[in-house]
Image (cartoon, rainbow, N blue to C red; front, side):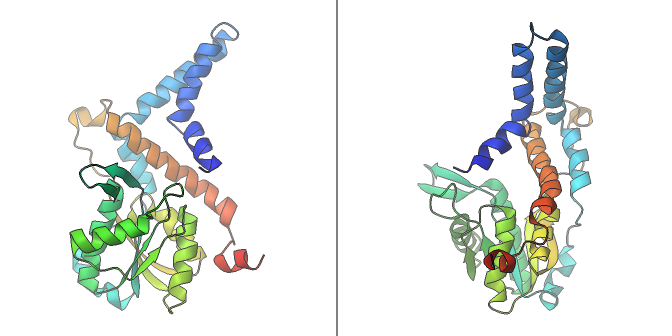
Length: 263
């Protein structure tokens, strides 16, 4: 299991906030003022993460690409040569299915990609590698779900990637080998800015097709100011995207599949 997994989940909220609460308890006698600061920051951060209204506001700041109106779907084939749909995790060994299945966010993306494919007649590439090294790949699960559940065939499976950057590197290499450089990119709305940047860095022309918007009216009682467990998870996803958008240009600027292969 990659070490980045531990750093990501320990340092990013809610893991980092829980560490602050642990530090507050450990420092309660050694440094009471610092302990109090850690406590209020940790508890306050968890409270803010639990508010649907905070999810809505944060998502609005991240979801920069508009949705494609359905009336424009059919004309996308004039601008693009293929649809690329990115994986989003998987559920392990559900007894109802007796095999791994795409996660619910992945299914949301796949459903949208299937609709676009039927409207445009464009071929689909599913991108997603192994889950911590264990088969089947996310791309293989996507291919099965598209075929069996959405009656949509898939042309390519990119099964090597473990990150959004690798999604772009390996998918672009596969598509360019067939003369394809213009794509409709399907992923979650908050994930789209980082995904688009990665694919464009690897020489692809991208038409963004975001789905799964969180920056919409939350529809909760009291305007979303009551804590909710689901909001904590959604806030964590949005924070991951915010950090990724800051870190990726620092790490991958100018890095492409061609430059990596030349070293």
